[in-house]
Length: 407
Image (cartoon, rainbow, N blue to C red; front, side):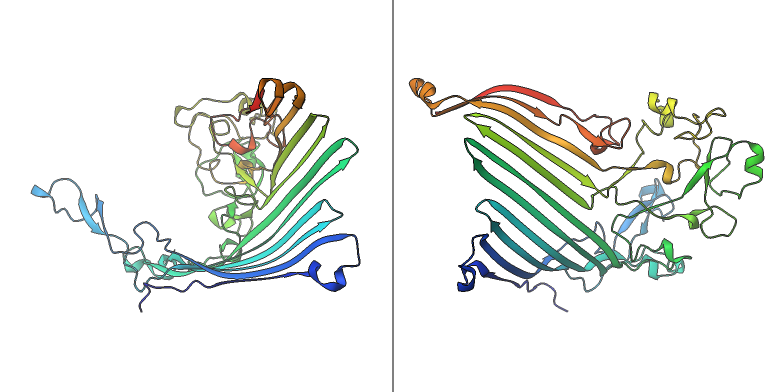
């Protein structure tokens, strides 16, 4: 079929209820509008090497270079046929309102269905095929959420005050991605969030060799006392990849964003502060602060103080070793942490110089201020900033003293 062209209709309707005659005889609601919209958005989000047949340089391929030297070439992923664009059907219902001459409220609810997402078909083919499966426009993801914003300003005597906040929640669910059949339903990506983490549930550390001998075998390599012991989820008395379960939230994008601000000014002297936070957010502790001595990396004091030893059997982290222990490097609850935080993004105290002072030197306005950025964070991270939990570069805070003028 011809998919060179696509139709992307959008429509929006609104009703300003406060303009109705029956809304005139009241003093509480100054403005009220109900609105709704629908639209279709398309994008050509083609995966890398996902549309066309390709060949790849491979040591196991057939050599075709001069003198049959070097590596060879083998056929790559199968080509995609009858491709089309990814589509997003977006629905939104909202309400805008102003109350009591100063309180502004906006509420939005949304639903989105993304379809025709490019996904690999490898899960639908037997390995007898011998090639990586083609990509196909078959993926479907549903998303829904809500956004709320409030803002209030008022003059109380000689004091001007302002305050407000915002909150947004968004959750996605994979409806289809052509994944391969799984041994257990809880292993399926379908029905879970985009970016959902799958991990083993740690139930402690092996105490000694007797504990290892009396525990279910773990098929991730040899273990020693101080290595992580995992839960047998499926009851088959063996610990392997079939015991990984959905755990935590996405480590890429939080489900919840929120913030609030407050400020006041009296005769030119004022302050304002802005807070911002996230929730439903999971950190993967994979930086060198949490995985020391891997590839000759350093060790953090935090890991050293919280490592397993026979005297500290309930430690935060497994035993310290310069060996690669595949068992301990599996994604598990040991390496997951709550990445939620609330930060004071910026705060300022200022004084606006009186106009009769600055007019003498031909200025329209002048303000001296002290301003702080990222002054503190409320979070569950004991060693670093949750925004940079896997980075070697720490977050910074700063304080500025300045003068701003307007001509």
